[in-house]
Image (cartoon, rainbow, N blue to C red; front, top):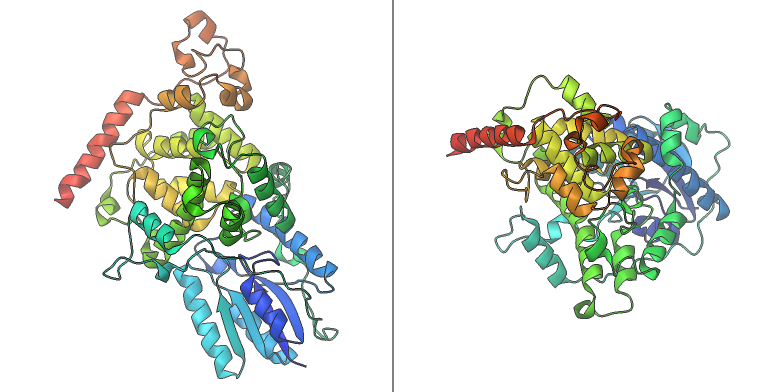
Length: 476
């Protein structure tokens, strides 16, 4: 009987999983496996993402078991693990879906060559992205650095690609009695059970949960109102599909297909158009990661390598991480993150601007903290987002664009509902003072258990502008 291994990675689902479908259609036996080799890559998962991964793998294993199959777990070097398995089990083929970090590409290329040299068929496919990074290029065949022209070409090439179906049946497992396989606990993804457990209490995990979230978002008109309401953090106006996308519990093809299934592209409403554009923004992050792999570790533009970030960062960084900066919208966002493993996107931009510009702390510090605490800490999106906010990456916000946290708070949370939810010590304040409690009368301020601002907004803004002017002069 012919036997294949299917290697799950960022594709923890059965539907629209093209490599899995091919393996199931072409081979008599299929062995589904997951290998934890994240320690070999720069995109190491943080504690929150590890907790999500544990539960997602558990859901996937249960789904496979309902189909008469199972999922087997390994920890360590993926290439060594796979080559040992192919020899032990007389494997004919290995299937997987692609990852896009340069280190993963090198690993997979070398693995494919080694398998072919052994006479084993190796096949990879695309389950993570709508378009492959090499499919969208400028006329001169170079990659885009700015999102808008990239988005226009993606839209022009078409946004409707039918997802592939789940396998009708999953072939039986090969005989495994004489071999030792690890369990999910072998991966030790829940080494820090207390805080991640609290975070995960806010979420439903897995392919079914992802599909339900998308269906609810569309059917309850969330997508229709997305453009008008998405910037207001107190309103449940976003899909919260980002962690499901990160772990591949749902695909961009599935999202766009469901959004566009009942209307022509030229007739879609503004909300749906804006939502689809955000899905493609995530795609752009992987595009930049693929074409400019150096952005994994450093700013895209070389002048930022000499940026005068502050050295005395321990105290202000801790205040930022713990939501004790004295600026309510920043602190509310950081506390939402710690409690739920997620933060509203508008607030993400505010807290990132505050850290990198008002506090003048290197964006990489923020990227690391987000990667450790976000359940949707997608390495490509997280890196692109932080470089965008600090002004040093692709399609970056201009260096002089420094979010004023008070104005942002007053504009996007005018009644203070978001602030009151995450900052209970300010809940009794009126709508005027809740955005800037330091302006309260001294007698009232003294009894308030909330810190004073750790920086002066005007002075810190000017300090950032002066620092950016320095590197701009060096670049000329």
